[in-house]
Image 1: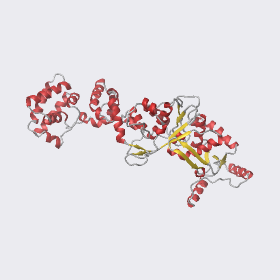
Image 2 (image 1 turned 90 degrees about the vertical axis):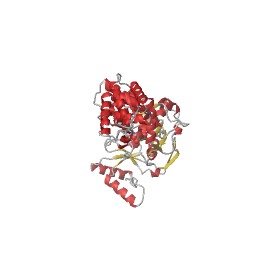
Image 3 (image 1 turned 30 degrees about the vertical axis):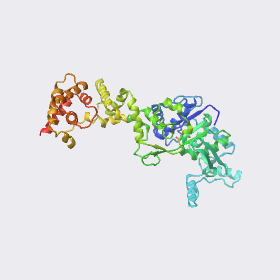
Image 4 (image 1 turned 180 degrees about the horizontal axis):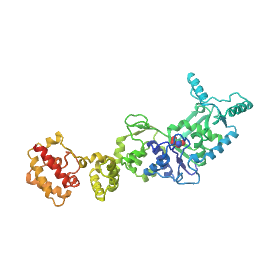
Amino acid sequence: MTDRPIRVRYAPSPTGHLHIGNARTALFNYLFARHNNGTMVLRIEDTDTKRNIADGEKSQIENLHWLGIDWDEGPDKGGDFGPYRQSERKDIYLKYVNQLLAEGKAYESYKTEEELQADREAQQANHEMPHYVYEYEGLSEAEKQAKIEAAKAKGLTPVIRFHIPADKTYEWQDIVKGDISIDGNTIGGDFVILKRDGMPTYNFAVVIDDHLMEITHVLRGDDHIANTPKQMAVYDAFGWEAPVFGHMTLIINGATGKKLSKRDENVLQFIEQYRELGYLPTAMFNFITLLGWSPKGEDEIFTKKEFIKLFDEHRLSKSPARFDQKKLEWVNNQYVKKTDPSELAALALSNLIEAGRIAKDPDPKTIEWTRQMISLYIPQMSYTAQITDMSSIFFDDRDSLTEDELKELADDNALPVIKAVAEKLHHLDTFAAYFVNELVNSVRLSSGVKGRKLYMPIRIATTRHMHGPQLAETIELMGRDKVLANIDKTIAEMTK
Ligand code: GLU
């Protein structure tokens, strides 16, 4: 553990939209920083220019904000350790590359892609692990220089490689995994730190930045474990103290048990997709925090404030986190039930517009109607886009009833009950749920029909569906014209 003030970073490469796995990394760093009154840094690792996507950075920032994650320093905020975009730090990397060159800890490498490929093939044939073969092996300094001059004369541009010291073991105490020890000879040999385009590689830039930005703890996915010894070698070369590392276990698809891969089409994996479906950010925050971390006890619903208070990096799980879609829906439903219906209505409205159920730019009456309609479904709803299917009774005009529905209407009392209800609805002064309930009661009393034999025919005739939310409220929201038209249609179907 370090006694420096705690500084952590989330360092996305803007090569795509915010993925669940990255969001989790951001979130754990955020909780760790806030729990310890530390500093959270956002750093954009955009040196792999071919893989960057337009708006990648913007999308990361927007979606992180949507989730409720903020930071103290970053490209959008500034800070004393900037710039916070790696593409703007090229001069800084160059300075350190030159230092290593001057100290003989790095060198110009002219091996071509073809030569490297030939090495790899030979290694494969010998059942060796792929590794870089030192191109100046056995050469004197003068011979080495001559080889370099010859390559230059051919117009070749070098990459810069870092000398990995021989026979070194890299060891660290990982916050999540405990003691880790990796034999330096398995790293793959001297690796590139500066590419032909003048951009540093990830393993080099990350060390320079983490050191200069005074990062004390690096919490990241365990797909980076193999990179850590390379980074430690660079720390050693400069004589710098490495941060404390914590490598979080991967996320697996709960349904298949396989590693959650971006190609897995059965699971939505980008925060944006959940946002579009009307999932609530507070619920997503809660759900993602429990992916590979858990507090003591059985409770599963916590506010951000509670999570910050409870967060303990030693409770990060050592076994893979299961992404369970059912649980995600359950968590969201817990939040939906607690959320102001107006807020849900605003989300649902955009889902309904998207689905073509409601015209764009709805008037205040439609907005209020949606608010009331959605409140009927809140208890069952996980996310607001479900409203499109759930509320189909308000939008679909069904020409014929199902067999099951017709069966419910086969009873002798059904038609008189429906006719009595129609008559009363026609004359109802105030077309509102309260009065609809009174009206149904009065039909119950006058007809002597009760229970399912009373309610089912009324429900089917008024809504043309045997399932739906509370009947009186549904009738009110459908409005008199539509309900009476539904009844006419049903009577015609019953009597033909
Ligand atoms: N840019 C790297 C990534 O997105 C960051 C890795 C790290 O945290 O060191 O995977």
